[in-house]
Amino acid sequence: MEIITSEAKSASYDTTLLRRIVKITVFTAAFVLLPCFFFYNSAFSFQFLPISAKGKEAYKLDKILKNAAMGDKTVILTTVNEAWAANNSLLDLFLESFRIGNNTERLLNHLVIIALDQKAYARCTTLHPHCYALKTKEMDFSKEAFFMSHDYLEMMWRRIDFLRSVLKMRYNFIFTDADIMWFRDPFQRFYSNADFQIACDYFNGNSFDVNNSPNGGFTYVKSNHRTIKFYKFWYSSRVTYPGNHDQDVLNKIKHDPFITKIGLKMRFLDTAYFGGFCERSKDLNLVCTMHGNCCVGLSNKIHDLGIMLDDWRKFKSLTANTNSSSSSWTVPQNCRYVKYIYTIL
Image (cartoon, rainbow, N blue to C red; front, side, top):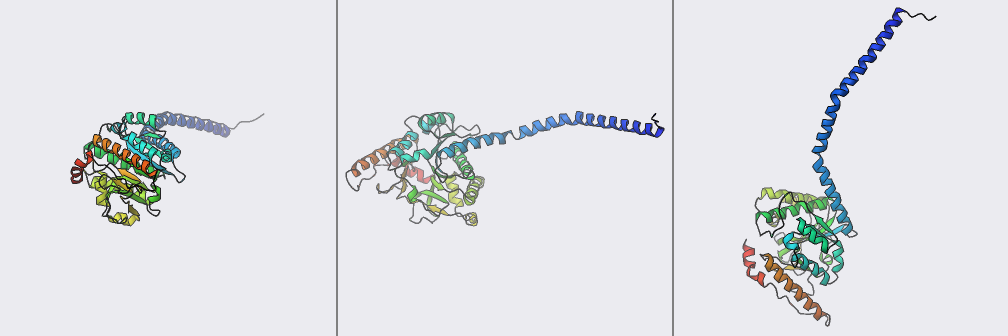
């Protein structure tokens, strides 16, 4: 017969009481903290929802870039809005130039068209396999953006910010405005040791000289820590120089000591190969691209760029029968009358 002492009874009672206290404490803690956990978790999820959305957009963009990229992760990028992507507008001329250029049609496989509005995206998908709809935070970029208007400035700075994100994703790029006609593969004319290369409205003969007049409509940029820092600096400088577009700001910051500090290797491209209405590529045997710059008004651009393509076709038909040709451009025509206005703005 087991004898239970008073001490044993007391110990048993204490153990039972302790277990009850622990259970009550755990239950109370769960009752108090569980709603807090759900509230915190909901708040946390809501707080980071924009980042999640950004992550999805980044994934979508990366997939498109990867499909279009060359072996060294280089892509060709252009931006269009509804006005530029409309039927018989600049996008049609732009794509046609690749098809009739010398060894340029294959480059269309590496072209990504960035649509700034839904209608531009819809039109792009009927013409080209690599299209990306850029989110623009309720800004309406669908209409023709007149030079230096509010919409024009917003569109230009949105472009710089987007290009910075492409560099951060480790893609090299050629950025080309859609009013630039492509006639030859430009890669053979790029400098192999430069980080950032840019076309010029006017070229002074020295590709190292920062006093050249750059045009942000055509750039070749390699992704590295220097170019990423440079594009971040360029974009943030819009606050330092309010009311200026990206090209004007570039002209201000290209002399900044920060460029030397980060070691950016910048070169300016010769208009003999990368010309435009400001300063034409005189020799059609050498030209790679021609820009509809120094021209105000969409209809003027379309008219003159259409004639430019005709000039190129005539040149090709002549060179098919001879080793070289002395053909020249018959443009600008309509753009000639607005060139002076453009250059003094």
